[in-house]
Image (cartoon, rainbow over all chains, first blue to last red; front, top):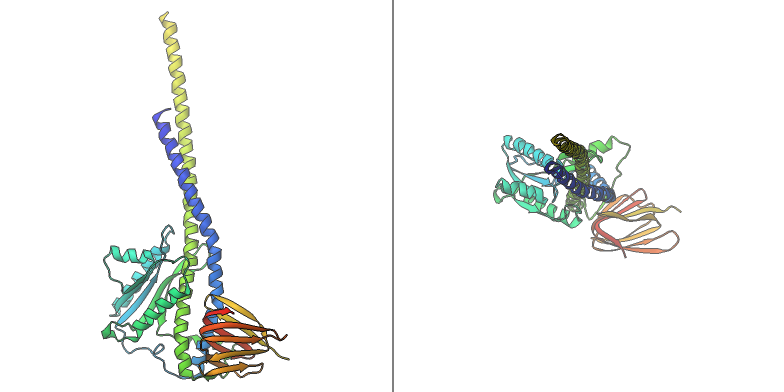
Amino acid sequence: MGAQLRVYRQKIKSAQTTKKITKAMELIAASRIQKAQARVAASTPYSRAITRAVSAVASHSNIAHFLTAEPDQIDRAAVVIVTSDRGLAGAFNSQVLREAEQLTTLLRSEGKEIAYYLVGRKAVGYFQFRRRVAARQWVGNSENPEFELAKEISDALLADFTRDFTDGGVDEIHIVSNRFVSMMTQTPEVVRLLPLEVVEATEATSTSTEVYPLYEFEPDPASVLDALLPAYIESRIFNALLQSAAAKHAATQKAMKSASDNADNLITDYTRLANNARQAEITQQISEIVGGADALVSAK
Amino acid sequence: MATLAVSVVSADREVWSGEASLVVARTVEGEIGIMPGHEPMLAILAAGEVRLTLPGGKKIEASAEDGFLSVQSNQVQIVASRAALA
């Protein structure tokens, strides 16, 4: 076999092996999207119930709460970046990090310091490589986030939020994460988590048909709000984690599909070249034989 | 007789939903029983059991931790970060 032909055959083989792997990853991601989406859907009743309750308290009573009060001056902002633990998901992580960098530039231009809270190994790696410091980081289990993780994150955030700027506390909290729009689209999204903008939320709902009745609060509106707001933050963070997990699977599926398609193209191209090389080899062998025979005949 | 539309919701799923004629829950101020026609209410739950009596007289118990109870026009929502049927 000619050297050229052997090289092509090797390349075909390698593309085929790669394709097997990417195809398997595509199928795995596809099957996990369903599950991840089901988890997003399953957590919706909880977040809806909490949002309704928060709006009810906020619209019913005029209590000032430290979670909703806009501080006079914002010195330090917390940015929570939600990425995945693993790559091979196309632009999934880089688009979130890019969005976070844009937010950083914006906040810096407003004269705010920034504290980073990283979720997922990819964000941690990105920061380590650039030797940047993060306030807190959480890695592991980004594909299947548990509520405990959301609770841990929100507890850490709330603890820093309640502290003063001089003690290393933060005055506002932003969360940057991927949102699952459809199988084909996942968009990075920036949401300001704290201070809560409850007023806008209630105005938005009061325009709809829903009217909030006069509630009786037990023990009293202030303590109900005290208990509700952290739960609301937890559910928002949990929702962001679940959305990000679903988006990650969708992004992986898309990336792996295009990788498989590319492998297919490579295999076709190299097969053509290999056929060409084989044909050239045969032609050469025939002409050598014919030439040899001719030489024998003329030698007689 | 009117019934209550009850849903027991935990952070990651809806644990139970259906009709009930009586809901007994423990709030931070003590036990409270809710029957159809109860006034709108929001209460913080103390850790403990929630007992539901179905229209047929059957009883269901659920445990709820770290949550709240909301009642509004015969709809009862028991929302807790951790909730499970006992």
